[in-house]
Image (tube, rainbow, N blue to C red; front, side, top):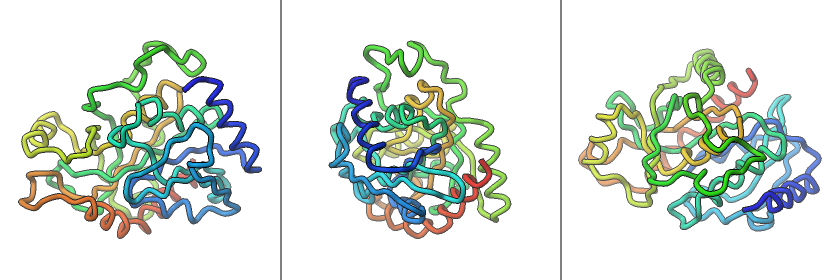
Length: 271
């Protein structure tokens, strides 16, 4: 993915909408309904956008929605790309580079994840305070994209403390419980083993999932302000003596969709 590719994608998006998005929003599994609430929307399916991959994961519509939420203009990804789908890390994180080139400075990353904290329950939301990259690969490997950031970017504040405080205040005002914790990025597509989950708990993680970390790393490299929120869709492997299914993830996130929309809308209105 070259700078010329990014510029081509940016030109295509700009030629198909009158909006100038200021906030990027990546909507995880089962959480895409928020994008349907935008006013004056522009819809662009990934298949028609130059250099975009196809979103094949269940619960991902595979389109950009650009529109207004209150007085803010958003670019929403209804579905993301995952490493487990067979895409390279460059492809997985390509939309983040495009957002930066569009002038977006704030990125909200959301996902469905397995809860590691025994105090969490399916349907809870978790503010991501930090992450552990357990994917065995880094999206910045290869020639550095000097146009976007430095060769060795600092990762001590990937997730904006200021945006985190806004999210906590919004959740409190709305009466929504917002947990906090560290997110572990795991490649998938198989779920983690009970032994792996026990290891992550010992490391102090609160949730585990198959996305978000690559996008957060690239966004930090691009000097974007990042907010991360997980929807706890299930308790992770081995915590309960029941098998995990993808259908369960989608079902829980669908049920939490209205509250998720309220929370993100409240956060954005306070930005």
